Amino acid sequence: MANDKQVKPTEEFLQLYSELVVVQDEERVSKRFLASHGLSMKLNADLVEQFLDVLFKTKRYETSYSEIVKLFLAQDPLFALNSSNAREVEILSAAVLCLAMKSNSNIALGVALSLVTASNSKGRNLPDFSIDILDTAESALARISRQDRSKPITKNPVSVEPKGYLAVKAKIDAEGVKEEDLPQLQSDLSDELVKFISESKKAIDESYRRAMEHIESQDEELEILWWLFGGRSIHEDKKFESFGEEEKCIVFAKELSDRTKLLPGPTSIMAILQKAGVGEKKVSVVKTVSKLAQKTVADFCVISLSPLTFPLHCALACRNDNDEVEVWSKVWASKAGIGEAHELTSLSLARLFYFERLLLRLKY
Image (tube, rainbow, N blue to C red; front, side):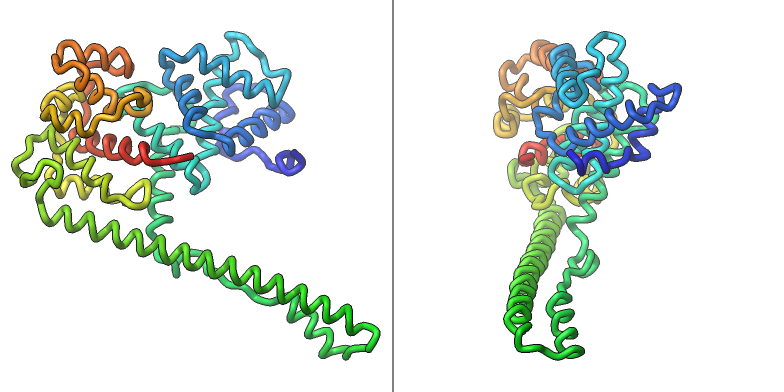
C-alpha cells in the first residue's frame, strides 16, 4: 500500500477525470486514481467483461455496475452508491482499462483486443470521453506487436557488471588487507560473486528468451508468407480466387490466426488480408455468416463464448443452432446487442474475426 501511495495520477487519468472535478479536489482524485491503478493490475477476462458491460451498456449492465461499485467501495468506503454516480463509474471504468493498456502484459493485450472486438467496428457505441479509448486500444495493439517482433539487439541490451565484486577488489588493491579483516573480505567477495553469478544467469535467460521469441516471430512470418504466396486455403482446399467476398472474411482470418505465433499478430495483418484478396466492400455480419458452408460454420463455431467480446463467433453459434437466417439473425442481434443491418467493410470484419480467434487463445 505504501508503494501505491507513491504512484501519482497519470495525465491520461487526470484528463478523463477532469470532467467530474469542478474545483480541484486532490484527495478525491488521488483516491480514485489509486483504486483504478490497483484494479488495472488485477484484471482478468471476467473483470474486463464487467467493465465493458458498463461502457457498452449491455443486458448485464445493472449487475456489472453493482459489482464495479463494490470494487471501488472496497478501496474507498465513501464512494457513493447511487444513480447520480453512473457517469463517474463510466469514467473510472474507462480509466481502469486505459491504465491496464499501458503495459506490454497479457492483461494489456486482453483489454485492447476485447475493446476492439466488442466495438465491432462501431456496431456498438461507447460513451463520449475526453480520450478516445478505442484509439488507445489500437495503439496498444500496435505497440505490443512491434515490441514482440523487434530484433533482440534493438531492445534494451542485457548486460551485467560485477560492480560489487570490483568495488571490494579496488578497496583491497588500494588499502591492502589486514589479517584480522581477511575473513570479512573473503565473505564479502564470496557474496558478491554469488550475486554476480545469479544476475548473469538471469541475463542469459532473458537473452535466450528474446532470441527464442525472435525465432518464433521469424517462423510466424515464414508460415504466413507461404500461405499467402501459395494462394490456397488449407481448410477449404481451394484457391483464394474461388472464394466469394463474404467467405474470405471468415476463412482467411481463421487460417491467418492459426499461423500467428505471437499475439496480437503483425501490424501488417490488414495488408496481408488485402493481398490475399479481402476487399473493402460493405458487408453485414448476417450476410457474411449466411454465405458460409454449414461445415465451415460447424468447424469454426465455439460454443459458450461471450457475445460481448466474441460477437462474430456468437453469430456462428446462432447459425449453427438454426440454419434459417430469419431466425438465427434475430437471436444473434438480441444476444449481441448489434443491429442485424449493421455493416462494415469486409476487411474490417476479417480483422475483427482474426482478433477474436487470437483472444480465444489468450490467458490472463
